[in-house]
Every structure is written in structure tokens, then in C-alpha cells.
Image: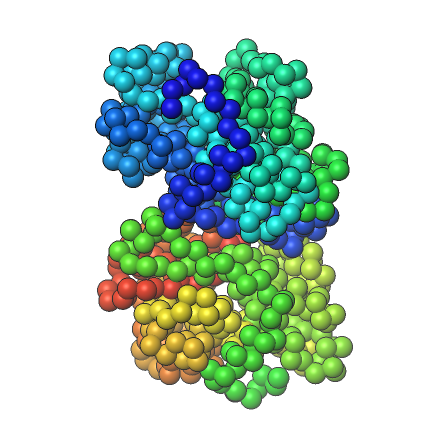
Length: 318
Length: 318
């Protein structure tokens, strides 16, 4: 797993990940709803990764990557720069393998995210927000840690694809599958899974309108970068650019990309909590919004949606 | 279905209801969680009636009752006095059978509850809160409507028992099953289901400490009445007394009763939303609290909990 070599994963890689993750990941439920189908005018299948370990799909990719470390890499440890779901995914996967994990977080990361990460036994390394990537790279050079990149990593991509693999296994053919896009890990893994299992299924990525760099990159063929971190409610999708491996997979296997407004994200979030009784995070609502609110045309009859996670602070409600 | 005759349902009645409800009710999922099991120190099985039609188990009993009306009773219509989940259960079941439904609600019932009820095509009859039962009784006498009592009705009781029936069918034997208690419909149906399918399972009812009339009635053998409507956060359990049929079943088939504090209900509610990603209502948290917080001793190794519903307004969160 040498990061400087650019290995773009193939559909086969997802099958390998499925085997590695068996019995370790939660096989999350697929939820359907009369109310939802009536509202959308089609059959909708929600793959509920909010019920995944650590509360999001990110555990899949992290575990697939860490399970393939060499014995020497395991002894030295892993590092990543993330204060969100990927940090917790790496921390838990590393704990299960007995691998030391170092998570580079900004000085001002919320206490609740620090606690969640240290709760899995990982060590937090604090630094100014702008220096996170540089600090991670330094730890790789100086300490010999292996970087587990949040999305631009072939094993992470293949692991994320196992959610869609399970979905196809459970419900069969789909006409279309909506996926939220941040750095591009989930959508590239999902597109590979579709290529392997359900080649007639169109995989469509969804971004917040105000964070639409992946839409632009998908169309232009080069990585487009947002000037600043976008202020979307979908906190899991506040990435400024996607990865090289992600773009390569997306250009080959993704059918289309679309965007949704902040108002649409909020409306969808409310619908899922209030009517479907599922706690999901705003990033997950992004993927459902185009079909719930009818802003995407030509979705077909059988539509899947990856509800990516459910990590949101509910303290304010009680 | 003449309300003045007191017919106490038997375990057989639940089997009959299972047949009537097949293909109509949602076969709700049973959720398990590593986190929950670790916290409780045992295996816990959550029967998720928050995913039931109308968002609560109440649809089961209402449908079982309405499906057994005579053709003449169907033409005349049904009435009930409830502004909560039972009202919606009756409204939907009546709609599915083409039966006119009249729901007596207090003048000050929240607009959202009125809208949910009229959304299923029921007619709301407003009156002062204190006159609701009297007004329902008058409609039965004068209009010939059939009263679908929220809990003191043998068909309603048998219908509510189908949730536990499905649970036993899916997970097999349980040592104990916790059920929230308001008027006693769910616990009496559940106890009958256990008697029919899993006679070694102890059915235990749980009430808020400040609404513990059923605990007292269970022990004394007579119906004890609270002087005022209890001000518990568990709005589905704000009943002042249980029913005659419910008490009769409970005395014969329920193993034990316990109570939980308001703080315990809130803590459990938070845990279920934040960690399990399930939107449940406070009444559902009541049933999980004794095992999550360890206030009930001797629960055994395999424990079931009926999460009774998920109807709570989430608007404040966004």
C-alpha cells in the first residue's frame, strides 16, 4: 500500500473486500416504505449505513485497507487526517487489528468527536486546521506510519463498494442508484460494485449545489478545486476536491452527477426523521433528495439510495 | 362486538389476529446492536413498531377490531376518543375497510394531530377534553357507531399481541420481554402472545414512576385510578387507569411490573436516537430503560423489548 503508486481499483476489488469484511461489518438493513414509494412514484430501496458500525459506511473502507497491511506496517501503525466518520472508522478497524492509530485533528475539533475517536483507543494529534495534511505526511515520513487516506486509496474505495454489493444481493436489479459525493470514495466504490453485479444500473452522484466540485470534475475530466471549504449543512461532504483514483473510476463507471439545494437537503432530512423514523445525517439526505423532491428526471422504476450515515448530535431535541 | 359484554381474550385470539393482519401490517424489523448488548450485558432484541404503519403498534389492534365488524356496523361507522396513535390507527384501518371513522378530540388538540387524522379521511368531532368519553358514548347510542376502545376491547388486545408474536417467530425463545404500559392494551396482547408461543418468557410491564396506576392495579387486583392525568414525558402513557379486560389478562399472564423515572426515560431516548439511530417516542423508551440502565434485576440472557412507536415532532431539531 504505497500511496505514491496510483493503483485504480477494478470491479473485482469489491468482491475481495466483501470477503474480508464478512462477519465484521454490520449487514445493514434495506428499508422500504409505502409512504416513500407513494411520494416518489416508484420503488425506492434505502441501504441504511446509518446502522453500520461507527454509524456510517466509512468503517467498510477503513477496515478493508487496514486488513491488508503487512505485519511490519501493522506494528508501526496508521495515520489519517479527519475529524469525522473516517476517523472513527480507522480507529475502530485499527483497534480490531491491534494496530496503533493516529488521528490528526484540528485544534478546534469538537470535544464530542475527540471523545468518539479516543473511545476506540486511537491517539489524537492536534494541529492547526490548515496543516493537517502536511502533518500527516510528516508522520508517514518520520514515523513510518501508513496513511489511510479518507477516499483516494484503492482499498478504501473497494471497501466502500461493499454497501452497494449487499444492496444488489438483497434486492436484485436496480435501474438507478443515488450516492452522496464528498471526496468520491463512496461513489467510486459503488460504481465498481454496480459494474460487477448489476451493469444495467446507472450510478448517479449527488452533491450540495454549494459544494459541486465533483460535478464539475466529472464533466471536465480534471480535478476541480473549490476555493474554500463549502458551508453546506451536509458536513460529511465539505471537501474541496475529489481524489485522482476517484475521478478515474467515476469517469469510467459513473452514469451521471447532479446537485441539490440546501433547502432540499433540509426538507429531505425532515421527511426521513419524521416519516421514516430513521436518524440520518444531512449528507445521507443529499442522496435521497433528488428522487424525493423530483428534481432528477428519468430515474426509472426501481431506485436505490445509499443512506451514508447517521452521526448527528441529537442533544438539542430533548 | 358489543362493548357491554366483557369478553376476555385468550392466547388463541392472537393467532386469529395474525391471520387477519397478514399482508396488511408492516412486519417490522427486529433490531440488535453490539453497543446495546455491551451496555446491557445481555442479548437484546428490539421489536421496532416505530416502523409500523401510522408509526406505532396501534394500527394492529385497530385493524383487527375493524376487520371483524358486521356489514351493518361497517356501514354505520366507528368512533373512538383519542388524539394520539390510536386515532390514526383507527382512521387508517377504517379507510382500508371503507368504514366511516369519527374521532372525538379535545378542542385544544394540536393541529399536527388533527391533520394526521383527517389525512386518513376520518372526521374529527371536537369537544371539551373532559367530555370526550361521554361524547363518544352518546355517538354510539344516538348514531349507532361502533366504539373502538383504545385498549379495553378484546379484538384490540389480540391485535396488539401480534407484534410479540412476530418477534418470537423471528428470534425464537426469550427469557423476558419488556412492554410499556398505558391503558394496558399492548401488555395484555403481548402476554397472550407469549402464553401462546413462548410460555417460558416472562412478560414485564413498565410504567413511568409518576403514572404507576397499572403497577398498583396489577398488585391489588382492582383498577386503581390516578387523580389527575400524569405529566410524564411519555405522552402515550398518560392514562389514569387500565381497562377491565386488560387487568384480567394481566393478572393471569403478566409476570411482573416495574417503573422508571423521567430522567431514565430521557437518558434512554437519547441513547436510542444517538447511538442506535432510531427515532422512537418517549413511551417506547420507557420499555427499554429498565434493562439499559440496569434498574430491573434478573432479566435473564435473552431479552426482548417492544419499541412501541416513533411519533414525535422532530421539527425543533433542524
